[in-house]
Length: 323
Ligand code: HEM
Ligand SMILES: *[C@@H]1O[C@H](CO)[C@@H](O)[C@H](O)[C@H]1NC(C)=O
Ligand SMILES: *[C@@H]1O[C@H](CO)[C@@H](O)[C@H](O)[C@H]1NC(C)=O
Ligand SMILES: *[C@@H]1O[C@H](CO)[C@@H](O)[C@H](O)[C@H]1NC(C)=O
Ligand SMILES: CC(=O)N[C@H]1CO[C@H](CO)[C@@H](O)[C@@H]1O
Image (tube, rainbow, N blue to C red; front, top):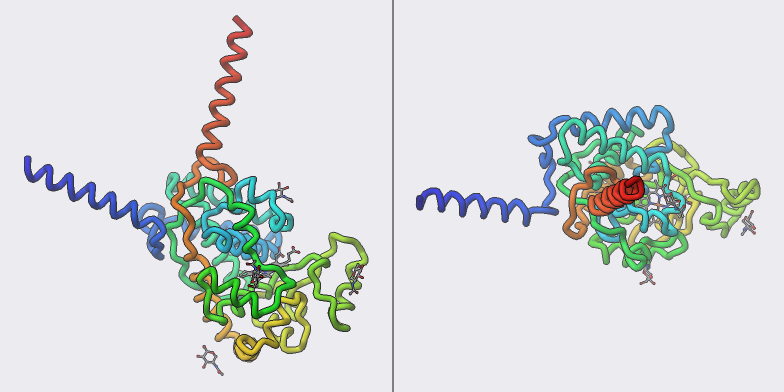
């Protein structure tokens, strides 16, 4: 009897420890509960890239926009946040890819993996498939109950900001090493920016801006050296004053970041090492306690339940009318 009670206490304690470990990420978090996870994610990202290489850029930006405002919690996929300003240009194909992967993973393993973990893993794979570094990405995140607030979304930095301010903006999120800002800005080695963001303050960038007269939806590659490859071409461009955004070009001139840009332009391995390290750091920004979204990455479980109740109520109303 006493032994049974003692073992109950142990079980309860273990449950408490497991619950309080939410947010404590580890690389083998899903190893036992979903051994197929990494293979499913990589296969799906590879297939998506075969359709459209831009999906790498799409995922990278989603990961950044998910993690920075209120922690990595897939809040970016909920309607409130998705409908907000910065999302206006998130790639719909990359957003849908995350949900497609969730459906595959949950079909194989049950609802054991969060949408936030899928964003992190898919982004990690999209980087290495584009020629970038391969690295371990800790897992065990949960999905938020709500989108980020407007105030939290407003903590995403502006491309018109000076580097001194960007360093402060990143430090306030726990990314305090200037190498974090420089390496993560290196995400702009792939992808495109809308013309309204081009700095247009010297001959080179005014010429780039001029290509935009084609229309307001025209975009310009952020890395003018090797637009679609994940490499250090972006830093080579910054050294040649061929950065596209004010926030990019500033990195080559600020005393706390210029030396790092020079290193990364000369040594791709140094960039790759720091990028992997800073991505893990970005991925560790912790969201509030949450859930594993079971039916769709675009809906909280409660919203989904409310839908179900609405349908049930409608059926009951119909039945009453029929009577
Ligand atoms: C220093 C802070 C940053 C600023 C000010 C910034 C700003 C921007 C802007 C203005 C765009 C263009 C959006 C558009 O017109 O569609 C953009 C695109 C992009 N950003 Fe950043 N960004 C920053 C940091 C990052 C980080 C940390 C990452 C990821 C590690 C990242 C990844 C991307 C990617 C991949 C794109 C291209 C997206 C696409 O082609 O779909 N950015 N960024
Ligand atoms: C970045 O830092 C500057 C200077 O402190 C501040 O004015 C700006 O609002 C910050 N931006 C974000 C997005 O936090
Ligand atoms: C950039 O292009 C836009 C639209 O084509 C134009 O209205 C604007 O004057 C240009 N800016 C500069 C600085 O050339
Ligand atoms: C390039 O960077 C890597 C990683 O930081 C370093 O081990 C290597 O010595 C560097 N290579 C050169 C030529 O500086
Ligand atoms: C303002 C805007 O474009 N919002 C979009 C955010 O993303 C979702 C999903 O791709 C779109 O449905 C919204 O229209």
